[in-house]
Amino acid sequence: MSEFMDIVKMVAGSNGGAFAITLCIVTFAFWIYGKFVRLTTKHDAFETACNTLNSRVEKLEGDMHEVKGEIQYIKSTLNTLVNMVQTSNQALMQAHSPLALTEFGEQMAAGLGVDAILARDFPTIKAKIDAEVPVKTPYDVQTYCLEKIPVFPENYLDAEAIASIKTYAFNNGRTIFECFKVVGLKARDAYFKATGLA
Image (cartoon, rainbow, N blue to C red; front, side, top):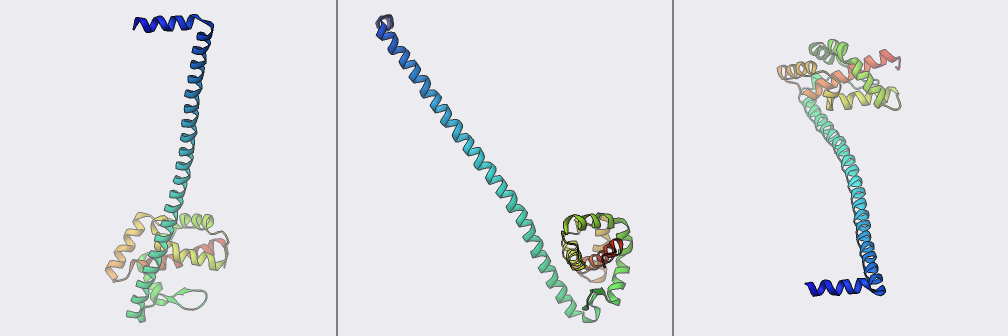
């Protein structure tokens, strides 16, 4: 070991040796710096890829939520159609324009306590329609009320209203979707009245 140190001292003592050692140190420093830059660049690229992936996953989750809503709407509509065929004398809505509740539908609305529900929850419903229906034609508002309120009632009605509607549906042998459709149509009427839209 002492011989090695003697050789290093001898090389460092000469002009060429000192230059060679300095050159080695500078080369090593550049090599370390290059490695650091490459690692930093790879890390930045990885972080960018992760951020892109996260935004795609968030968009996919939003799309999946919409798809689930559409599937639920189709399923609930089919259940309603089956129920209407089975009890054709108890149709809820009249098939003329604009849609309106039948006498049986009005009886259901009264049994559900829709007027009391809307007295509490209409401000929430109106705010949602105002924010989420870009073109407010009577058709667009009607479609929104009949498609969104029955599928996502928790976004429009308080827990007490949802619980009482479920109880009514259970006690009267109706589907929950039918009940929320009645609420949706009544909400449409309340919106029309509040805004003078139709």
